[in-house]
Length: 75
Image (cartoon, rainbow, N blue to C red):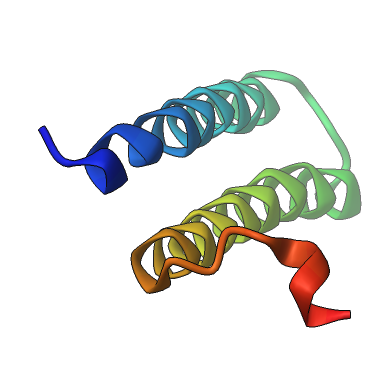
């Protein structure tokens, strides 16, 4: 197994855990009774967090593949 593939396991597992958690939050928002504005917020927030989690995973994968692991080198 390549070194880069091993480094991808942790970010992937964390992202999958977060997506599962936010999906649970999303399904809960459908089960409880809320006013329309509250329901929109209860749906939008988990969806936004899922999107951000996937975006950060993609950025991390790009960072690992480029070999630039030292974030302090950018500053």
